[in-house]
Image (tube, rainbow, N blue to C red; front, top):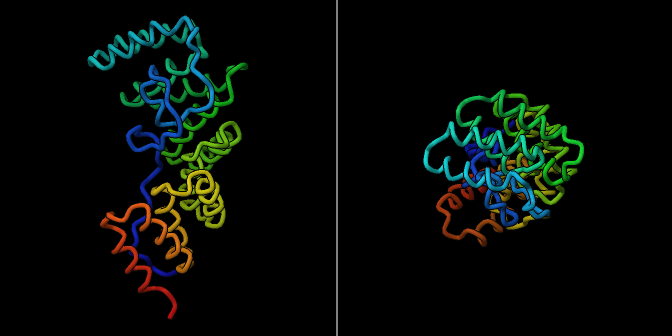
Length: 238
């Protein structure tokens, strides 16, 4: 295989809400819901857990993590289906290094019999990210597949599928997953950069260059574009 200087796309994406694609307005009570892009359904405003989650969010923002955790737990006791309580508690556990506790919360949420499909997808996506970070790539892919069933319009799922499949050497499947994401978001810079990388590393230089043209139109001031284009052209068949 040809050696490429092009850097691969960033690692598994979505765990940082500042980097995640936001397909729709999030529930304002769900601190990190944007990271998983939960969309489609309106939040359960009638939930008895709302007041507790609001208070927990305020405590979290004030740096009182232990008190926030206690209120999120009480909120889940009142309403185990209330997504902001579960996701925010998962986030705090993860930040504290309690990966097992976060995973148990996600798994128990996925077991709820009457959970909405979008909520199941959201939890499946977060579980997949956690598994991928621990190197459990095949199991992570299984959960991303389920997320795609429950939330077929969630673009970030296909992006992460592509990265994991590529890492596992399943190159054609990686491109297929990426094309699904590009069908939904044809001007996403992250997806387009991934398309350049995957095509280039598979020897599809002409396709990679075609994607570069789209990137140049969308992000003309990106300083990386010129360097990437020169690398591709230097390896293109004469």
